[in-house]
Amino acid sequence: MAPITLDAVDDHLKNTIQLLFQLQSATHGYLGPTTHSELLRLIPQLSSSLSALYSTASHIQTQIPPEIVQYVDEGRNPDIYTREFVELVVKGNQYLKGKGEAFAGFRDLLAEEMRIAWPDMEGEIEGVVGIRDGIRRKESREGETEAKRENGGAS
Image (tube, rainbow, N blue to C red; front, side, top):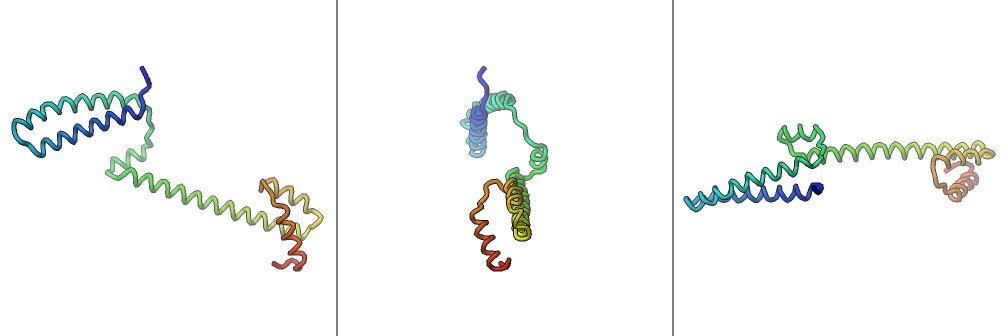
């Protein structure tokens, strides 16, 4: 048997929804015997459609977090849960990014001050900073260091 895909489940779900819509329309505009025969035709189709949907969907492996199931059980919209979760993740990422940038700025400032205080250790300082920083822009640093030395260490 071929593996069951989400597209197959989606097709069965669309078919079931269409049948429910037809049943709703028929009951809303009930016209007597004509509508009664239409309902008698649609109800077994709905039953078989639901059965097919259940048998297809039961073979799909899904893992829904219990928090979302509880959220829906409480009558709340799962899209709101997703939006709130994304907002929390973005907030956390921004916090960590800011923290990383602050430490990188402190590292660079400390390294620069150490270069000024101990010019003979510039190679070792550059090596330590280079390990943490990855790609170094030594030319721009040398220009900044020279400018600071010319200005007497003032910015």
